[in-house]
Length: 79
Image 1 (cartoon, rainbow, N blue to C red):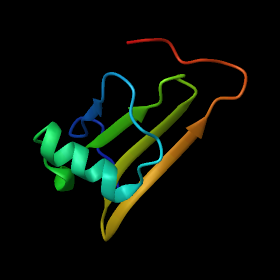
Image 2 (image 1 turned 60 degrees about the vertical axis):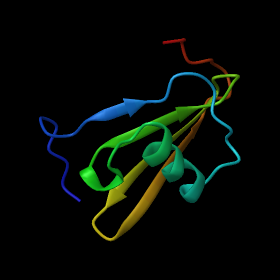
Image 3 (image 1 turned 90 degrees about the vertical axis):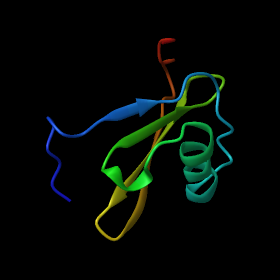
Image 4 (image 1 turned 90 degrees about the horizontal axis):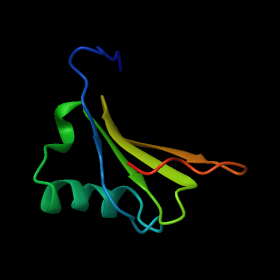
């Protein structure tokens, strides 16, 4: 997938998200709670309560992808 920065949107879920959720659970959050289109090419970012784990969900050309980032020594700032 080729990303066009001017057209790509990033949505950040405020608050803590249950990080046991995977593609199905996170996609339900995006559609039902946020009312957004999963297939728009946007990125959807979720953070846990301790703010040391981030999951980013996005639609590639033929399926969903999840990027997971675990920060061992630092904590991400609150938004």
